[in-house]
Image (tube, rainbow, N blue to C red; front, side, top):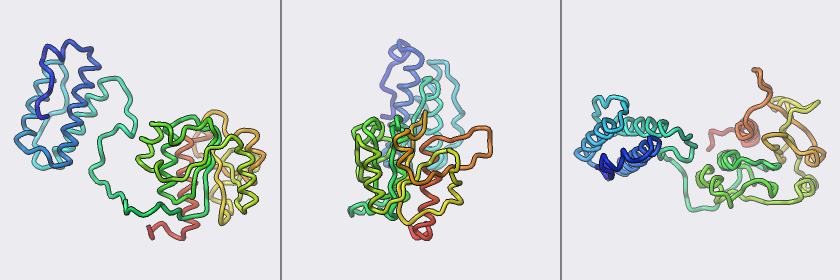
Amino acid sequence: MDSFPFTKKKLLSLPAARQHKWIANWLREIYIALIAEEINDASLKLVIKNLEQLRTWIGFSGADVGRLENRKMWLEFISEAFHEHQKATGLGLAEHDLLPNVLKGDAFTGQPWIPRIHYRVALDNLRSAFNVGSIMRLLDATGFESVTMTLKTPGLESRQVEKTAMGAAGWIPQIKTERMPADLTDLKDRGYRIIGVETVEDSASYLNYPWPQQGVVVMGNEEYGISESVLHTCDDFVHIPMAGHKNSINVANAFAVIAFHICALKSGSLAQF
């Protein structure tokens, strides 16, 4: 592991982007081994020697090694080197492809997941698996009851949703439906207020809206917002005031703003978590 698996001839036979990709993958393995404390100081010094040699071969000047005096400094250096070479591939890097987090702190108690507030979210024709996965993580963080989504919205069957949700998609209750307006009407009959997040005439700022004890927050498509049929099902509309030129923000970011606001109001205080 501490020695790069390619010879100079084999590495230089690859296109430049793949050279950097292989080096980045190698550095990822080193980083994971360092977190797991499966690599010693002598091996780490060999890693640096190999990395400097590799960079000489491909004519790439990365950041100077400097003095690496402890595990934290080694982690920072390997992380920065990984991202230097990943950037040089010309490929983007989604959040779920980042290096593993050193500080986890996740609370897996073995007990079933329990919602904290009587709120749900409805995803009306969202297309981005990354947005859906991010919303899954937010549902876990804020304690919403469940997510209802149309058939066009990627759910647990999507590998990208699963990876972006960082595991949360495995326990957040999900309902796939081809009759979103009817399902929302059913929830309305059960006492849920249907609240669309949409910039429409007479919508209220989410800060001034009197959030009920239970409700469904409806998030619309990334391109055209909430569909016409679902708009007619909503009882109320809220928006997030914007201070700049743009009239909206990413749908997952918008849900984060709304969800944590509701959570703080309905749980009394997030400090109890």
